[in-house]
Length: 387
Image 1 (cartoon, rainbow, N blue to C red):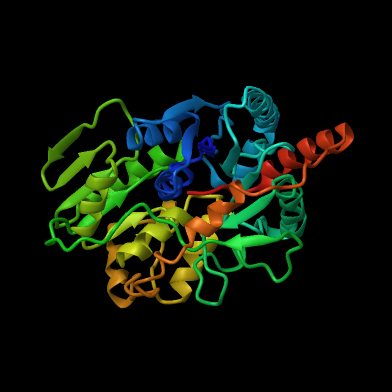
Image 2: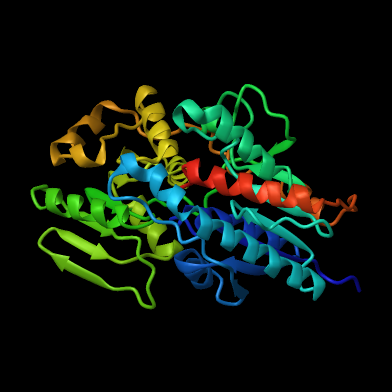
């Protein structure tokens, strides 16, 4: 009997979006007969372990990503941390080499972990950012981004190829010299018919200190809101905790089933404009209000894009007031933005055939390797990451 292929699924620990959008990919890999090993660090790994307690989990080096308190200093903060990011990339590459040498894994599915490519096994890079927006340096950072994507065998974009897409110019640049596969939008959630329980649901996540900054702003503003509020802090801990004060119920985190039910029973969602959150809200056809992370150009772009399209309004974090929620009534929300079958035509069986097929072995010179490490590190300084 042929041995089942074992795939390492490894999302970046930058907020929870990378990990949550890997959940449907892991489910499909398991349903297609693959064995899966989880790999990440911090809250991303904690989330995956809660979702798949039966699977082996490996702790990978942490990129230790933090935001500046002032969004305008975001790039400088990342510049100062770039040596630690480079160190983590080198460490995860060494860890991958050991896994391959021990024949522990047969392939890698990396969601934005930069060092998980290898010449001897098939590796996939998952991203919705084929173009990295960084203001005047967009062309430069996008070119740098392509340099490390090229180290992987395939690039999968969780979006649709045509005009009816979600990521806009992030995932659909005018020109791109790397072959990609558009695999359709990904969401771990399913729509449920439920009665309305909450007028507003707050859904937070993301690196500190900006997650806490927004939590404090929203808590202050929602004291004056007349309606039932569910506040999910997005803090993964050993146990779920909840408190109720007046009209606000606060929960530290929710696993998929509870989160799905809560979202479906809420009339309005307040959240970051991270791409994974967008995919979830589209899947559930929800109305929303976005507050992009200060300095995160990807989230700022998506927030402006959906506001301009008349779908979801947004406010800058420092300027948000509870009265801003009144704008929602003149926006369409994500109701029926895509056809009902949009999330069901991903063709995973054919997609995962990549891990079963033969491939040409690649070699990399040491010079190219170290040049690429430098490029990846500098790019990560300017890259705005994911939700």
